[in-house]
Amino acid sequence: MDGIPDHIRRPYRVQGVLFDFDDTLTLPGALDFEYIRNEVGCPPQKAILEFIAELPSEAARRRASERLVELELEAAGRAQPNPAAASVVAWPRERGLPVGILTRNGRAAIVRALQNFPGLSPDDFTVIVSRDDDALPKPSPDGVLLAARRMGVPPGELLVVGDFVFDIFAGRAAGAVTVLLQTADALAAGYADVGLHEETLRKGRFVAGNLGADGSLDPEPDVVIADLGHLPAVVRLGLPLPAGKFPIDLLEHFLASLPAMPPGVIVGPHLGRDVAALDLAAAALDGSRTPLLAVSSDPVTFTTDALGRWAVLVNANDIATCGAVPRWFFATVLFPRGATPSEVLTAMEGLRRECAAQHIALCGGHTEITDAVTRPIVSGTMLGTAPAGELIDLRSIKPGDALLLTKPIAVEGTALLAAEMGAELTRRGLQPEELAACLALRDQLSVVAEASLAAGFSGVTGMHDVTEGGLATAVLELAEASCHVIEVDVDAIPIYEETRRLCGLLGVDPLGLIASGSLLIACAEPQSDELLASLIAAGIQAARIGHFVRPLADRANMAPDEAVQARHDGASVVWPVFEVDEVARILSGGS
Image (cartoon, rainbow, N blue to C red; front, side, top):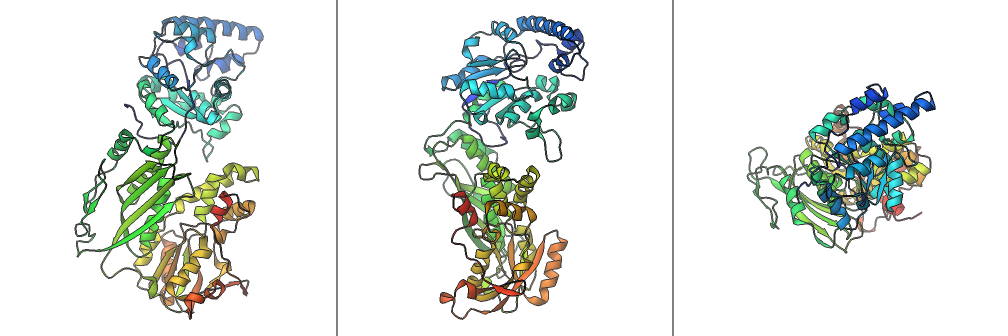
């Protein structure tokens, strides 16, 4: 199918389609807005309907409104259909989806204009919402919400299509999926000139959901198309998929977006290829002898937000902790039956973008819709290389080595719970700016930079990234893997205030909260201060939180409180043990 969009802002589902009329279903040019403004006395910087509503007398408002109706009807007589209008309206209707029109015009003008549309009439639309209805006009969401009710469609699963900033603001404010028809004519008509309509856009309750963090207006649509005929491809991306392989044409479209494979990839991703081939000698970073190959595999199951990106991050982190460089990634992407193509493609796009950001080749994998899963899963395998003889092994840790921690703990769990439970956290009192701060922590999930820096220090004897089970589990794992008792100063463990706030509202212990983004580093004491200073100079928060005390006498029978000796306010405390990660407990409804 032609018109598969190269970029979608977020995954979505579609149960109905709501069209703008002028310059969307019609060809541009029938309505001359500057002429209309002159006729009703509206200044250039004002939106016409809002200007009329603010006229000082009822008589003036009536005269202006009557003249506006006359001009609209004249323009409706000249209106010509977009060549794709009939087929684009028919495509969702043939699949059982209701379609509608949302316009700032009067209904009479729409009915008159549709007389010029071969194959289309008002009866082809489930609903036509105009300014004659009891709803504020766009950019208010009122018309979108009214149309959704009449169509029997949840607002979040309604596709709103238009050529103008008002269409996108109205749709976004209602929680709908928004599509901008951005032809050259539509762009010239003023979508880019948000400032011209700033006053109108900022009026009313609907604006709150459209403001960026800095208070600026954010009119970005979910999808942009250059031709109305491309809309069926956009609708298709929101329809449920049956069980089986991901559609071939969508997979081909995604594979075509991947960059050229780097040296060392002999056989890369291609439709029908189930195996990739790598030449390690050709992949040597410094031209030296064949490097060592490091391999890690981890799934991402907790979140549907940024699923692909997180899969790359957690697997790259594992490779980096042994001193290797992440190089090649393979992903198995599984979605439950009923998932939409946009949901799958968003996850795959996250894979592509994060691999590109970290200079990792996405070499292959498998994508499937299956009844075997009830929520999306991306299982990744990362391969990396390290110079021969330079792999960092936890068995090198010695008594007296310092234990360092990068970044405040639980940034991953904080961002994940904020994404999955934003509405509940807001209900419990978390403020919008606090929620935004929690979500922003997902930019700190990589430990590749600090692991790469630490790998260059001769005093570094081991590294371990903090993942599922949080810092509490990671320290126990490190004690087990290194065969050493670890003493931890609980007071030295850094935690962001937003993490404390979120954990307090949900009854979560941050020590047991999944925490990709933090790295535990074992370093010989003489070099530890220098390493700390280097990390901080590189803009990476780091702290000394403990040290390795002595070898474990009986690792098999050692209790957790013997393997990890914790101190708080100078007194011994029990180091906590979590049978399941706090995220899993909360998302499963545990208390």
